[in-house]
Amino acid sequence: MRFFKNNARFAATNRFMVESMSATAERIQQYETEHGAEKVERFIDAVLAIQEHVDPTIIKPYQLDKQRYISLLKKEKKRSVQTAFRSEYEDLWSLDDDERDREEEKKETDLFPPKPEKDMLWFIEEYSTVLEDWQRDVMSMLRDEMLYFWPQIETKIMNEGWASYWHQRIIRELDLTSEETIEFAKLNSAVVQPSRHTLNPYYLGLKIFEDIERRWDNPTKEERERLGREPGRGREKFSKCANTNRTFRSSATI
Image (cartoon, rainbow, N blue to C red; front, top):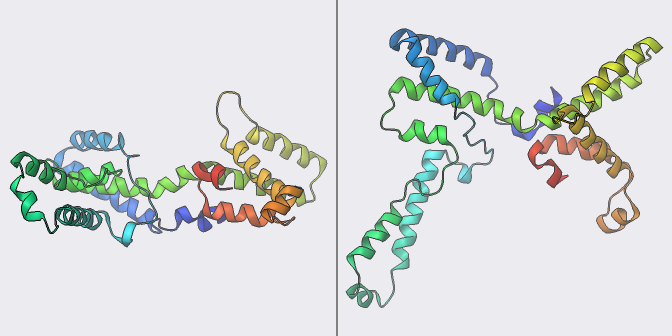
């Protein structure tokens, strides 16, 4: 729980998701009554097929929502095109303007969206001309749920590694009997055992944190001189990594 509480990826998640999911279930049940269960379920299956195509960016440009940001981009692009053709010789250039060039310039200005859009669910929900209101509502609900679970997908390895690391440290501090120690060793080794066929997130996450601790507790002479690392800062460093990094970028930022 401490990992989820402090990691930056979870800062913007809905704190009332349990209540929200309950309301979602009631609304979908109502739509099934109104439009038929088969039709609603078929549409939900189609949305779930593309549910991972969302934009979980936690830093929003200019602190704007997507619709206002797209409007801003369109205005800026139109302004830049108009400015590009203003000069003291503009009247001379206009004599040679070709109608085809004008049409191409207009097409470039009217590109929609002005930049490639990563959030496919949001784009379809906002701009589709064939969706009914209930379908937009279902897409909105499923998108919100995907955005809620996305940080857990991004931080899977680091979360499991964090849990495995502290599990081991806490158990080692307890005054266990020999039987309890053997039992723990068996259970723990089964959890963090590496696999030849699949990636074990518990093992990989644990080794990442252990490596951070080792390197920052005992930096080499070169690291101390060139990077200014001070010994004994392993716990401090990997706590910072756990709070700020996500799994897919951890190797590049640690």
